[in-house]
Length: 443
Image (cartoon, rainbow, N blue to C red; front, side, top):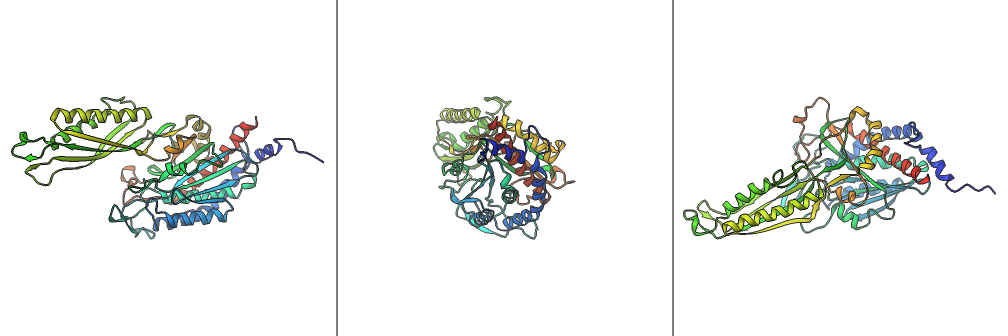
């Protein structure tokens, strides 16, 4: 009886899948391109449906149902109710081999849509005890639709897939409601990166800073950490005519705001971007009463994990020093448990996979932007396994960047012509990563 040599099956699979290091004409590339084109209309339809029916963080019940049904229909192993409403799909290829994860976020924002689209959101919900409009103002509807399309493309070539693809459809990227856990951290705690264990994870985000047809990638710190802070200044209430008879919390709070916002560039290395911002100040009830307490809330952001901790320490020290000098008391709370780490793109993974982006979009259409001080909880995954996070341009050609509404705007707009490139990029990254990693294992 003929016996196949150990590793021969893997070799055959690699021959079918191609080797990105040795063969520019990978066998699956043309088929992937064709399958991506054939699914484009369904990706657009999914995106429009999700856009018309947005759901807030940890409440993505309808969205999760659509995702799970589609993945089951493709024959994937499906796990639901991960981190409340998350869905995990596992696509096993022709032979055991490397594992790669692809992630999309599903939640919307408490934003009332102002665009006049046929599928514009009319959804209302409640958050923080208030009724709000709900909108996919950050493009997570596009992310989910793109990954649904990618799953269909890759499932169509499972017999020649040299490894396993894990699809992570994640809730609550925009942070879970107060008092709840959620997002990437909870997905990981509930086994998103286990059984099977991915060797790397990929994700994209739509942005209007880049034109449709463009991809963007930055190695190292790509997006900032983000930590919420709450500072409460306590003093002694008094008449506004006699401030010396009390302790002026308004004055103390004002000094704290100015000093902590000056810490970046003055007390920490200015060559590493960081920013401290106060977004809300509350204190007092009348024009002629100096209040006994002032509360401030804001965020701390950095592109470096060591600097992140240093900023926390210096903010506490500066606030305490100012308060003590005025005879006031101060309490500084920095919520690192619900914070986001730096989104760090593994440089070696980037070196290996950047050629894939250049092939898919064209080398001249792959940008290398400055890091962003916005935050993403994808950073939690990248703390555990090598991560590759990139941006997909969705600004219509001819529209100046200054005229394109930003993410989180009620007029945020996605050029649907960009969605096909998203499917092509995610599919190609998965195929090329598996082929390259399988080749490396076989050497």
